[in-house]
Amino acid sequence: MPLQKPWRDFERETIGHAPDRPGVYELGDESGTVLAVDHGVLRDELKTALAYGDGERVRWTETHTLDQARELAIDHRDRLE
Image 1: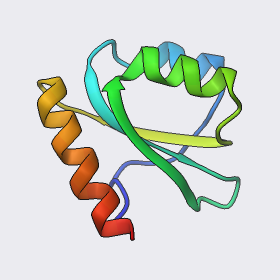
Image 2: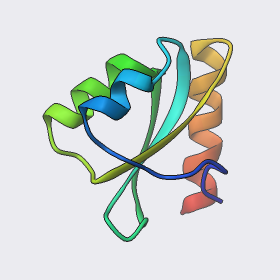
Image 3: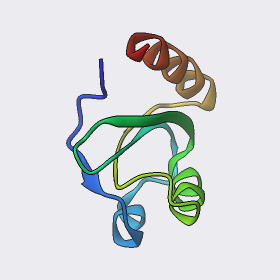
């Protein structure tokens, strides 16, 4: 099951709105197909992913801790497979 958040265009301006907090994010292609799921401090992770051109769209959800983000990402990946 994908994150229940709307897709956003994956560009610098979008990353500027990303929180500087732990969370889980999805990268997708133009049609909204999930390409990757990862976790970490959202703004830092998304800056890196944008630099590598890893997707066209992005969505995320915040967590309280990095441990929560890691566990949610693992669960989320398992559901996508």
